[in-house]
Image (cartoon, rainbow, N blue to C red):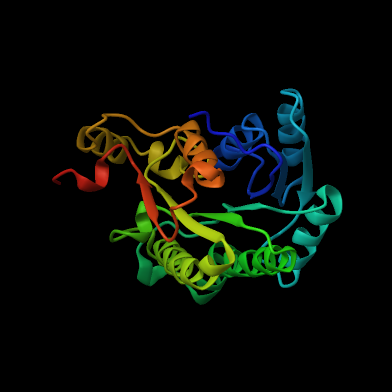
Length: 255
């Protein structure tokens, strides 16, 4: 079976680089019209040009999704541009604190939850309302992390937000399933992106990961892109409420 998403419109937050850009590329190659959103205009323009060069129909939107009202504005802008929205990929995230959890202050806590959890909720709500108003099926894909499934030393607040994302997806899957809206989670492990630089550039952590992961490597953004395409497509039409771990087997390997 060839996995296609022809005729669908997909929104990818944090879509200007790393995992977000890889997912946008996969969706575009699968036939979707793609909207990418990010905070920085310069990164967005470069990503838009890269996607457009492949022949994809793409639009970029500057948006700080964690801010109040931003989700409603972004979903409206996407619908105004493409006429509808079928696939939401909640991917934008932040991790302003790397260190013992008890050393994180309340401002760090609030900022992390604002982007990593509240924005996911707000965008999911706006997308669900749009889909229900059209009486249309849809797919939402939330990017969590293995840090939301395991203990997260040095990344405790980040891990809390990623656990919250998994809980939100399960609840929405139950509530929205009767409307034909599916909600699933991708939980990457260590992936070679700028976001994970603090971990990847730590030789000790890097070596420990590779030695423990059965596939003996760090992930690439493209490892996530193909799964996002599958979850957005009708090939996954009977899958909802699931968290799919993409970590080379790290989390199931003995310590």
